[in-house]
Amino acid sequence: MVLPLPPITPLSWPEQPGDLPRDLPDRDALDRRLANEFPSAQGPLSGIQGGRQAAESQLQRMEAKRYGRSRNHLKGAVTRLSPWIRHGVLTLAEIREAVFAQLRDRGQGRDDGSKLINELGWRDFWQRMWGDLGDGIHESQEELKTGHDPSSYSRELPDDVREGRTGLACMDGFSEELVSSGWLHNHARMWMAAYLVHWRRVHWKAGADWFLEHLLDGDPASNHLSWQWVASCFSHKPYVFNRGNLERYSDGRYCKSCPSADTCPFEGSYDQLESQLFAPQPAIRDVPSRRRNGNTRGSASAAFARPKR
Amino acid sequence: MPFQHPILWIHEEALGPHNPARLAWPDAPALFVFDTQWIENAGISRKRLGFLYESALECAVTLRKGDVAAEVISFAQRHQADGVVTSVPVDPRLAGIAARVESQYPLERLEPEPFVNLPRPPRLGRFSRYWREAEPVVWEGF
Image 1: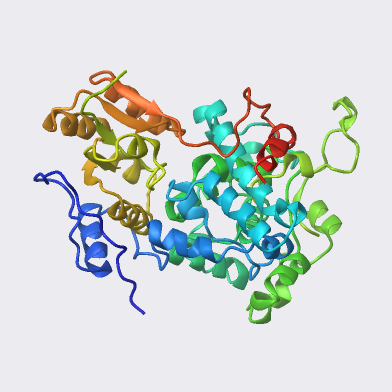
Image 2: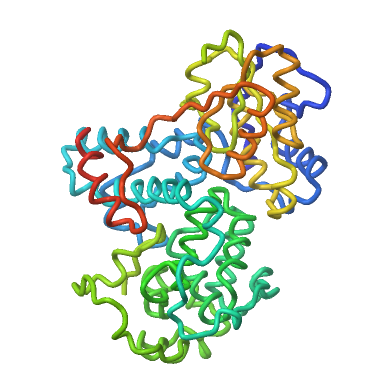
């Protein structure tokens, strides 16, 4: 199916030489024009259409209660609204109102909508943090808690990751989806970031910058601070996952056909993987003891889903 | 700052009908500029540009590319504008552009409708601190 262009609004003031065209006949023409005007910008268009009409259509599909129950699953009822939110095509205020209206219409309560409202809150939080930190988001906010020397992290994205040929069906699947569609489920972003930073010892910024090349919702603040959260320079400990976790939330779709299934680097318990990936930390007796309520991750969680074990 | 005939600078954070500049000035000539320096430096892919372009096509905006501040100023001059209106930018890159425009033209930055209206700036640093203050206010509208 070939996507059309969105409805084009006519201008009420004259064009000038050098204006980019608004009278493109179809999406192929847009693709060619972009290739011409921006030769550094790689790759074809996404199957996700920009613009208000597409945004409203996607908003119609939102189901707040189902979102709350299934958002960690790759096939869960995630809204996929992030590209339009990021570029202000939809506002957080109007989505909030849409959630409230849906809850009322369906006789649902605050609890049913609270997870989705929470995640809209995260978006607002990241924007406020950006206002606060400015270009400081490009620097690690805190020390790493991986036990490794920061300089041991490579600044280059490995070619096999970039090209989707690691031999790991999950990671290659995620790369492919990132590059072709410009959108990835939150959980896939977390797994991918953890793989790159902790298993491949790549500096968080290399992966974060790569994500911004491709994500239609690419937002420096939420993206970079979330990568830092995974890396542990904006959190109390590094984020890791294991095969069981990934398998569970992807319905085993990748593991089933993975060429590396017998040498899976994610096999093992969290304890095993942590002792494999990280070096012993200095004693934490110097760290002020605070909020020992078991919520070591919760208070520092990023826009990515809180890790479910 | 009461403008009589401003132009609007529409940027990447507000490519929709709720852009406060657009709401305040529904008929004013408006401009979106693809920031070529950002696109090259950040290795922005064509699909990101396509998304922006499609979003911009549904808005009434002239589309150009290049040095954003220079293009905005030029557009304002061409339309004999007495000022430039935009939405408050969060991205320092866009804030820098706004500041450069402002060195040549009176510029007004309008706030979009917020997600939550807090009486004073909330605590940040950790989501839980912010949300403790913000969550009850968000739900007041339910």
